[in-house]
Image (cartoon, rainbow, N blue to C red; front, side):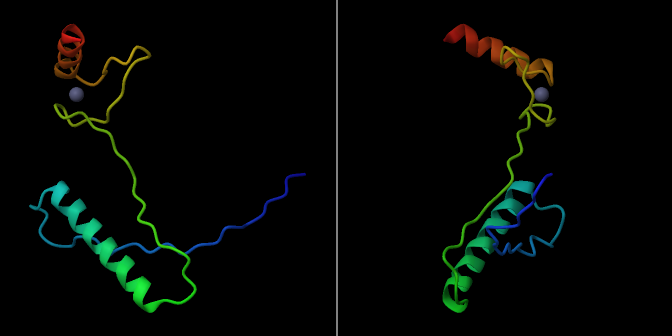
Length: 96
Ligand SMILES: [Zn+2]
């Protein structure tokens, strides 16, 4: 029989995030979110009892700089998304 135990309880706080104009780049929105997280972290440190530590966590997304699709490689490490990425890989391989 499987026994499930809930443990290591912790609180996660998500920032409101950037809610302005969509014309702002994704990099700028990500930077804004990180600044908000750091501000929340400082505020928790000043105002909240029983906190051992705060950490900022994030998700990682890997995309091709050329075609913007999700990054993937075959078993030999060769990119699979577009010809430009493959050409870049081959040109780097020749210079090594
Ligand atoms: Zn690509």
